[in-house]
Every structure is written in C-alpha cells, then in structure tokens.
Length: 250
Image 1 (cartoon, helix red, strand yellow):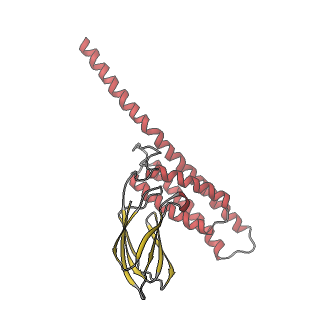
Image 2 (cartoon, rainbow, N blue to C red):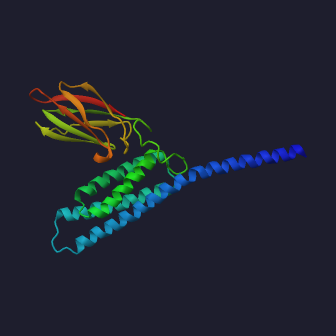
Image 3 (cartoon, rainbow, N blue to C red):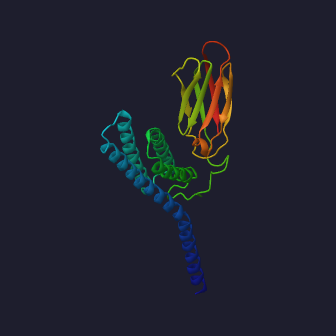
C-alpha cells in the first residue's frame, strides 16, 4: 500500500512540474501573439487611411501612389507574420520574416505623411523586435528582457567587398548594407555576405579590415536613435578607386 501511494505521489509531482513548466512559457507566447495581432490590425488601419487620403485628394502624384502601395504591402506582410506567430513557426523563421517586415517598414517611413499613426506602429515594431530577437517565439520560452544588453543573444558577422573611391559611408541594418558615396565616384559592385541579420537591439560591433589602403572605422554603433544600425566610414586617401574588404562581428 505504501509503495502504491509513493508511486502515485511521484506521478502527481511529475505531472505538476510539467504543467508549471508549460505555464512558464505560455505568457511569453501569448505576448508575442498579442503584439503581432496588434501590428496586423494597426497596419491594416494605416493602409486604409492612406488610401482614403489618396482617394479624397484631387491632386496626386507618383509619390502618393507609392505611399499607398507600400502601406498595402506592409499591411499584407504584417498579416503573414501574425499567421506565422499564431502557427508557432520556428524562432529563426520568425526572425527572418520580421527582418523582411522591418525592411518594408523602412520603405513606408520614407513616403509616410501620417506621422502620429506611424509612430505608434514603430513603437510596436521595436517591442516585437526585442521579443523575437530575445528568443521568445511561441513554444520556445525565453525572456522578453533577454538580449537588450550589449553582447547578449546570438552573435553574427558580415563580410563586405567592394570598390571605393575617396569617401563612403556604409549603413548596415538587419540583413542589408547600404552604401552612401560622400566623395568620389560611386560604385555599385558591393558584395555583403551575412551569416545572420544584425539584430534590432543594442550590440557591440567590431570591425576588422582585411583589404584596402585607406582608413576604416565605426562611425555609429547600433542604438535606438539610429534604428539599431551600425555605420562604417571608409576614407581612401589616394587618387582613383581601390578594392576594399572588411568584416564586422557582433
């Protein structure tokens, strides 16, 4: 009898521990699902408002049409992301999808005229970014505060190759590296190679020069002020273009 009671007690404790472990991860899942749902709804409202403004305008140009189209694309992408979160896709899938969603958001921002509405969406994007990059995908637990400090979370690197003449600024954000020619002849042969996207949170980025005759340095580290981008400046002191290669790690 005592043996039977002992086995029943052990079974109850094991089941209770499993249940508590599941409840420990569930709030994190619900938080991400709730935020993704809010983003989908706000993006849909934003897109509808953009079209109403366009439809009620007697004078419109190509920029107005572009703003309407981009807002609609962002709304559709937000809905897809919400479905992925609700379907409990892998955290890496959510990170990749959200990185593409952020790229669309930056395109919308360039043509947006509804500043107050878009500001609310931007804050929501930042909150979701911390949740996704912190490993808080549905069913995978995680801590919403994880990865907010420097040096936490997954690391990564990007190798950049290209031709430079005089002075350029390279802005790395997410999985993109945009080149701005400040002085000299612009070239479009840049080849960035990412092992993973630069996370949308504060990390410390290091730069290693592998090829090039000029000076390269980090002008800005990722922060909320620059939408978590790292900005690299390269100055080539000699006349004519030269091939450059560098690597950044975080």
